[in-house]
Image 1 (tube, helix red, strand yellow):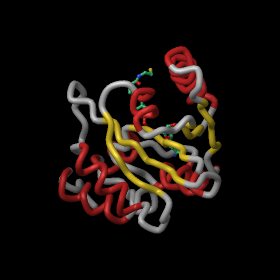
Image 2 (image 1 turned 180 degrees about the vertical axis):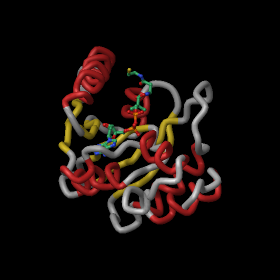
Image 3 (image 1 turned 90 degrees about the vertical axis):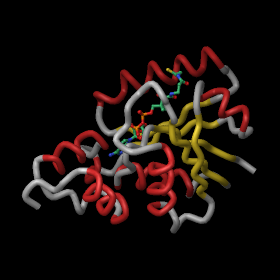
Length: 162
Ligand code: COD
């Protein structure tokens, strides 16, 4: 049984994240979407809300589980007995950050491999931060996020001119 982990902030999950989870779920027996709980960093949504939105958005994928982690990713990887980290790549600009993360994780845990999945062109501009910014200025984001995320964003951030 091969289990992979797709870690991230998912604040909130976007259609770009969903796409990567779908591609990874097709490759491995089980995929854990691992939501980072970082008490020192203020997120728009609590870790519970981020997990709930991810569970809803990925409910069509029976082999995908959603969990949360604190501290080092490699400790979580060992805890859930997985040796594959999945990350998504949108553009060359992602590469430097992702490369550093992968090298750091390899230094910490040489047995763990980071694998990258290239996004679909139609999601290459999508980020959680971008979605929140567009929404806060009244831009349409319905096609960028799952319906449950759209609903919760409306509750959290007053819609400006939507
Ligand atoms: N299309 C494709 N992929 C996408 C898209 C999109 N539109 N949007 C985002 N992604 C990819 C990102 O490139 C990333 O690979 C992944 O989805 C998750 O993205 P985010 O932004 O939600 O998550 P990040 O990048 O903030 O996650 C960072 C971690 C939580 C993985 C990292 O900070 C971490 O591991 N922290 C724990 C502490 C640790 O272990 N540190 C040591 C390593 S430095």
